[in-house]
Length: 245
Length: 215
Image 1 (cartoon, rainbow over the protein chains, first blue to last red):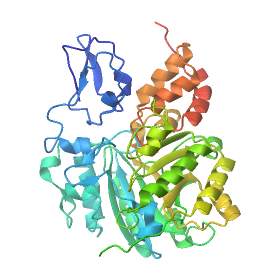
Image 2 (tube, rainbow over the protein chains, first blue to last red):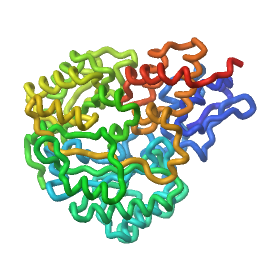
Image 3 (cartoon, chains in turn blue, brown):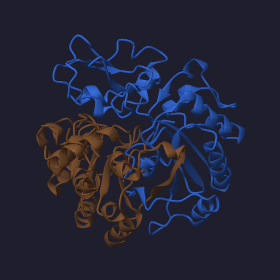
Image 4 (cartoon, rainbow over the protein chains, first blue to last red):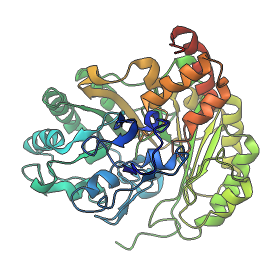
């Protein structure tokens, strides 16, 4: 994002809106620090500027800077991959799609969440650790896939290393008996990163909204704490046709 | 997209909050989903949500836009994101959705025990659960928990910690009331799942704890 110096009246109203504090005063005008800015567009969407001095940078869609936009602005359609958003439908339509079936567990590592964002050098530390642990099949419909240079090593594309994103989701599924190994690897990788991420797992339910005992026991055995709130697919969807494949 | 999964806050307030998603599945029931989603949207408006947004318009119900405009934007593939404020309203809404039987996936983000109770009372059989296993890495860099209870209502991180402190200052100095402050915080969330009702309750508790410099 940019703030036009010729228009800015230095009121500072836009500054609190930036989720990462990229807007500061410089010689009595508000200025966006281009290194800090994630191109999320919150300042522009807020329509708080009384003189309409906030604009999108002319280079925001240039590769590799465009990565910031596509993984930080929830309204941006992912032009690099043609996929909207930063994740897939994961559990949300699992009652129709059956992406994860009984005996499997979906896992998501949400880099940069909450709030802080993360640079790709740190994301790569996790993708490399996961690849080393045998997680090389990432959800193909997730735009995160486009960042990866080599799935076997977990290396990300080298030209992206200077970039950062507010949120990117590494999404994959494993057999239930592999969950412990995966959670252990994630915990180890967390010690290496200079940033934050959240972890979530999704699984088919047993009758009575019962989480399979094996999944709960694994989560607890690996020292993770579950939040009391969760996202629950209520099982009311149905397909009106079969997917071509 | 798991932007509603990691909501933080006092359990007594989380307990009353139900984020509801109407979610057609790409490639499976997108075609012809528009009229079904619209019927569900009309019903949800009737239930009096705390917030609501349709993905084809991306403007929440507080952004100077009419219900008709929001509903008219619905086409095949449109999703609805909405927040309901108490258990009875949630139960009544789920009963109506069950009765309507539109065949579109419905996802609830809420306290597991409450969703389990309501499901049992209505004879629903939830299919899949997504569990949050918490924040990892440099958690020392995070804003404090009292600020995160606001910021995590927008899982995409669009609600700035500094904006929360700014509205606290403005409430404390009498420039805004709790509801006006909450609507300011609701605006940056472009998924319509920031709950201004919970925000107002939390601000009420938080404002006395902060000191401000009137200069």
